[in-house]
Amino acid sequence: MDKINKKLFKILAGYQNYEWGKIGESSQVYQMVKCWNESLQLNQAYAELWMGTHVNCPSIAITENNQKVKLGDLIATQPDAYLGKEVKEKYNLQDQLPFLFKILSVNKALSIQAHPDIELAKKLFKEFPNIYKDPNHKPEMCIALTDYEALCNFCKADEIVENLKATPELKEVINNQELIDKFVSNKSKEDLKSIFTALFDASQDHITEQVKKLINRVQLKQDKNERDLLVIKLNEQYPNDVGIFVSYLLNYFKMKEGDCLVMAANEPHAYISGDCIECMAASDNVVRAGLTPKFKDKVTLCNMLTYEMKDPSILRQKVTFEDKNKGQIIELYSPEDYKDFSCLKISSKEGDLQKTVKLESGSIFIVIQGQAVAYVDEENSVNILKGDTYFVPANIEFSFKNSQNLVVFVCYSRY
Image 1: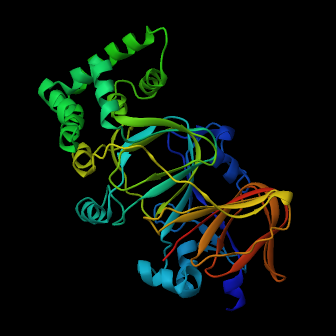
Image 2: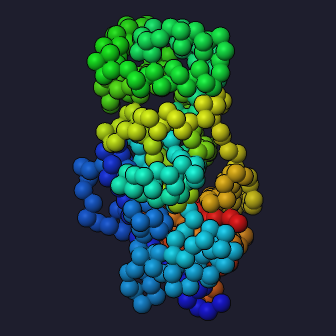
């Protein structure tokens, strides 16, 4: 392999100022970008950092002669070497990575949503290319960087029944006792779809009326539970939104740093607050229908969901290397069902990492904290600090030397 292929390429990630993002220095996204872009404004929302080749926000690579080119254009010059021959052929790519790597900083809830499977993604892209920007599926996983709140998957049937019984306003919005009774009796996916769809069929006037009743009742409660506090928060952020009632049908849970949630295709979810690493297939397809000022596609969302009633899919990381004396550990987050993306978390309190990393695909790493030397060989090593982001060609052995309180996340694909 020639020298250019062994080089680590610094990249400049794109970022998104969606209105739900954290403001200024409170945002992990801001903190990462500020390390190399001094022109950021403190009073703006910084929601997402995008690392990859997706056309909606491509990363810029800095070449060895200090030129700036789109990462996809760099990959296109030697796709076998940069992507990995097997990965290139498996995903049928020439200038794109199979994954999209992100940091999210969530200040307010973002969208009752789901992501399409591959068949639906192709259909939506063909019929509505102005809304659904690519024909790819978008399974994803979220690794918490801070305390993190989310809604994900439909609750188990018994919990939905309890929420229906305890929330008269929810039943009023559904406005069909027969549908409710059928679900309570049968607890079937078909009956869940009926009551879920009924929520979105309700008029805005009716939703508004029942939200006001709900909030008035909940605020008067002496002992408010977590769902009570959640609906109050959601109404403050999105007044009189149908998503406030949808939240009673979904699992509401809290994650700690390092916890990992996997979102399969056609499963409902919404992030509520916190910062996370997100890894996904290279797509920007989102079907939304609540808690958002963006386009709502209620019919598609109601028809696409699996209506499985289950706990959230929590992925346990696997420790692949550990040296307790030096405070070094490598943890792997790798969902079995999706080879588009996997993620390594590399932590090293001090010294040289006694483990070389070699990945079968092109990869991207970002330094979340600390500093080190990213080392390939004597001719190819770079000093890295918080916020630095690099593209690593496939099948390159690299390690981290002279580390100090280093935390790095690496995203890559499998075949």
